[in-house]
Amino acid sequence: MDVEDWWPSDGQFEVMVGALLTQQTTWEKVVPVLDALKEKGLMTPLPLSLYPLDEPQAVIQPTGFYRQKARRLIHISRHIMDRHEGNPAKLLLGNLTDRRQELLSLPGVGPETADSMLLFGGARPKFVAASYVLRVFHRTGVLPDGDYRSAQALVETRYPDNAHCYRQLYAMLVQVAKRYCRSRPRCEGCPLGQECPFTGL
DNA sequence: ACCCAGGTGGCCC
DNA sequence: GGGCCACATGGG
Image (cartoon, rainbow, N blue to C red; front, side, top):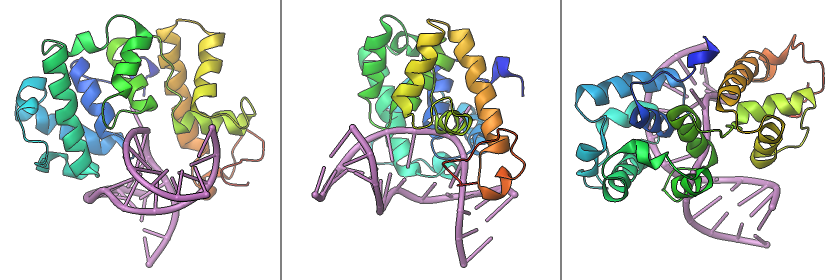
């Protein structure tokens, strides 16, 4: 996987949808769902905004948590229709801090999802300090007891305002984590060489 | 049969 | 502010 295009998509709205759907599941399970949504003409805010909030979408099901995810998808679609003239790009444009707060106010959009949308959807300079990132920072001693905020602050302070850097660093860290910092069995032979707070090895 | 996956929100103290 | 727990499905 080339770090340059870690998050492939046909547009900003697709990145937002992908960011929501990939929560607590694998990207491999999200891709077919994104394709199905496109096939049904649902990869755009307008039609999604018209669905009733309580109607779970069958297409979402393979990604898990499908009831909440469907509701959250409709919420963000309505928000874009009501507040951004139906243009997803506008939700990622302008003052970075304000846009991030706006994203965080949406149901189901936490720090990682908001920052993924900003960084990979809008190329905004916000580092995504996902759990994989924290694992590597723990294990390597870069930040032995860091949380999301401190890990993000560390990177953004060291490499200010550099979206390209954040994308590459994120992609690399996730690949390292997937290879070496998963469950106990996979940690055998880890070259990082320190006691792992997650596995105890 | 278990553990895990590119989190978030609600509750409790 | 930190520590649980539900949320749901499919793959290893």
